[in-house]
Image (tube, rainbow, N blue to C red; front, side, top):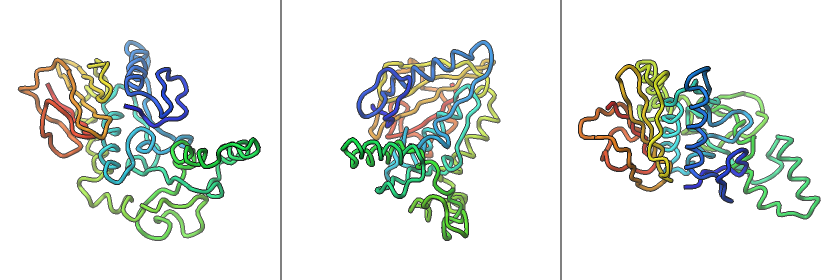
Length: 272
């Protein structure tokens, strides 16, 4: 599995298309271990200087945008750290993917484009890369409703509004019990009701699995299992956990079809 990230920073297991899930898991497991005995950490997958979370780490195609967004939300809210969200990621807002450099306002994108142009480089390839990595992808107007400019302003916004604002917006998602926004709210409630998600010990499972991120959280005799499929295909996982008497707490499909395998981008949380 390759995660979409062309600027992997400190990741070591890098391939041209991005970062392996195994490297991603090792990094966040190490991040947890740093604060396991002392201090407190934060956890996030995006901010104003990054592209949209679902486009970078999930799958923003119409078929998988909602499911993969919910899966990533499950990850953030079930790790031991304070989760941070950039406005719009809770809706599953995705990259706008501009085709023209004129649509970008970020000096980083504009400057890099000019450098490549001056050197006679491949501008089409650069613009295609920017559809994934450009910071302006995460800076488009927040999508409140289906009115003009997504209800963000009556004036002219700094950046164009993502064309999917008519369906991906607060007003629409508040009315849809299965929306990314309402799933986000359910996980906030679940985390508040279960201190094990906040303070529980983290234990990494099936570390070599290239498709699934699995781990347990444990506190005061209560133990939870988190299973996350980071791919658009069914995936199996080996946890060593007896699944015959578990209780499902939440699943991004609404209910599980099997405890032995995960559907594409499925996220399931069990009480053991």
